[in-house]
Image (cartoon, rainbow, N blue to C red; front, side, top):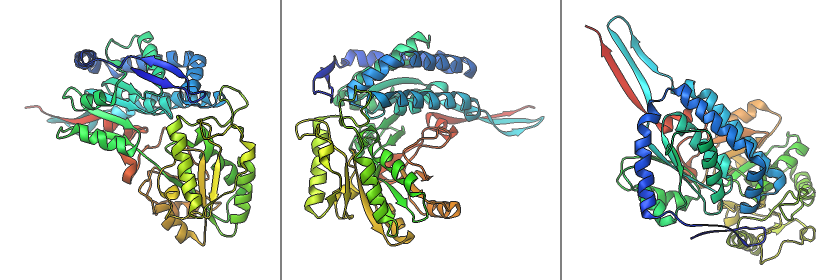
Amino acid sequence: MLKTISPIDNSVYVERQYASDNEINLSLDNSKKALISWKNKPLEERKKLVSLFVDNFLQNSKEIEEELCKQMGRPISQCNGEMKGFEERARYMIDKSEEALKKIISKKNKEFDNFIMKEPLGTIFVIAPWNYPYNTSVNSIIPSLLAGNCVILKHSSQTPLCAEQLYKAAIKSEIPENVFQFLHLSHKSTAKIISDNRIDHVLFTGSVSGGKEVKKAIGNRFINAGLELGGKDPAYVRKDCNLKHAIENLADGSFYNSGQSCCGIERIYVDKEVYEDFVAGIKNFTEKYILDDPLKVSTNLGPVVRISAAESIRNQIKEAIANGAQDIINKNNFKISKEDNCYVSPSVLINVNHNMNFMMEETFGPTVGIMKVENESEAEKLMNDSPYGLTACIWTSDDDFAKSFGKKINTGTFFMNRCDYLDPGLAWTGVKDTGIGVTLSVLGFDHVTRAKSYHYRTI
C-alpha cells in the first residue's frame, strides 16, 4: 500500500494500492500494441492531441495546486508557478517539434535520395520526482509523445496524485488508449520494469543513489537512460555586481520551495570587497521570510517534504556548526520550526569550508553557505571543487568577463545575474554526478529518438 504523508501536519493524505505484477505486465504489453498506430500518426495529429492534453491539464489548475501543496508542502502562493512552468515548456516543445524531428537530407539528385529520419525508441519509462512533479515530468513526457513514443509514468510516492492528474488530462484529450499510462510502484517493481525488455528507454530524475540503481537495473541491456541527479550549485558574487539584485535573487534561489530544488543555490562565494555588505544584506532579507502553514496565502516558506529530510538537514547544519560554522539567522523569527516536525527555519552559514559536508554534499533544504574569496581564480577553483555540476552562476556587470569565466566552470548551465531557472530553449543537462542525457531544447528530442538512414537509388 502506498501512503503519502503530508508534511503540513504529518497526516496520511493519499492511500493507493501498488500495481500488481499482472497489472504491470498488462501495461507493458498494451504499450507495445498502442505504439504501432501512435508512431505512424502524422506529427501534426500528435501535436494537436498533445496540445489538447496540455489545455485540459491547465483547466484543472485550482485543484492541482491545492493537491500539490498538501502532498509536498510547497506554499499555495507558489504552486501556480509550477503550472506556468509546465505550460511554458510544453508549448515550446510542441512548437519546436517539427524542427527537432525534421528529415535530415544527405543527398538529393536524379540518382540518389538519401536522408535520415528520427524514429521513436518505443516505450519510455518516466520516473518523476516529488520536488517539481510537473515541471520535471513535462520535460520527458511531452517530447516523448510528440516523437511517437508511448509513455509509462511512475511518480514519487510523495506525489501520486500528480500522475493521476496527468493521466486524467490525457484521457480527456483523446490521446489513444495506452499511449500514456501511469503506475503506482514500489522500488522492487520499479527495478523490475526497468529490466524488462519491453522498456526501450528510462528517464529518471532523483538522487545519485537512485540513478545508480537505475543503471544497475538496466544491467546488460543495450538501452540508454537519461539521469538528472544531484546538485550543489554555486554562485560567485563579483565586486562589480548590483549587490541588491544579487542578494534578493540568491536568497530566492536558496530558499524557494524550501531549498528543495536540484538547481537551487547551496554555495555562495563572495569577493572580499563586498563580502560584509552581502552577508548583512542576505541576513536581513532572509529574516523576512514567513515560515508557516503552506495553505496560508501569506506563507512563502513551507515545510520540507518529510521528517527524515528535516532531520538530515538539521544534522548537516549541526555538524557544520560543531566544526566552526556560524548560522547568522535569528531563529526567533521562525518559531514554528521544531525538531519534531517538517518546518525547517532558513539558515545562512558563514565560516564554512570545503572540509565540511555542508559545502560538499547536497543539503536540499532552506540553507546556504557563504565563503569569502580573494579573487576570480579562487572562486573558479572552489566552484569546480564539487562532485556535481548542474548549474552555476556569476553576478557581475562585466558581460565579457562572465562569458570568459563561464567557460572555465564545469557545469551543465551557466547563468549571469540569474539562477534557479530553466529556459525551455536551452538544453537541460549536467556533468559529473549530476548525471547524463539532455531534456528541453531541440536537442532533447534526440534522446527519445534514434537515427534511421534511408538510402534510395534510382536506376
